[in-house]
Length: 280
Image (cartoon, rainbow, N blue to C red):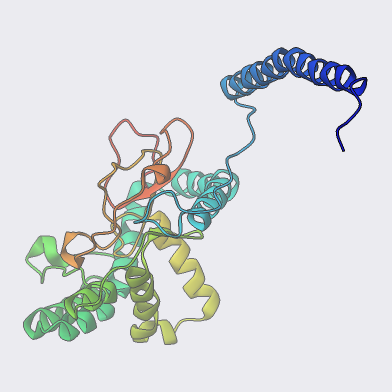
């Protein structure tokens, strides 16, 4: 049944009114969007913008990006609050000669691990040389405080279980940011843990002393297993710990290389001479 003719003008009037309201509302909506955009730009410029929360990886080669970012933020806060102040006290309290003796002693304690890994990698002659080096430095070198290599003693071979796993054909895996330790990957992290169990000296030292030794090694460049905390951002192509010999191809993501003015990063390379890195 057709509607009465008298209702048609009312219907047309309602449609016209709705169209007019929508047209009036559109400029207001655009104004609000423009205002919000301007506010976001101002907050970004002032440094008060809320942090970006990554729910999913933005790089297919970095599947753990979301968790890695959170761990990196934790490491940076820990560095600013604890590690860097302690490192400053350590450096200022001990002279360079004393720090060198400590560095040599810690490196000497890692020689049994290096010898074992040389053997596992099929390098028996290198393993024997490393074992001989450990004996010489532990006796004539006064417990390893003096490195006799500079006087013609056996040379050092830097080997770890992460490198051994590479020799055995195990892939390195994705980029991994480890609390306190810094950047790594599953293979290198597994190797670091295995190295601790492989060293017989660790079973002769109390747990507390082992923890303190690990902390000093982390602050002491050249001690064999240290990961240096620097204030210089690594390059995009920087590899993970283990050096080129370990075969690690895991690249440092660009997000893990924050500006040098703000953040602390971990690299396996020495920082620039003008870097505020704390030499220990």
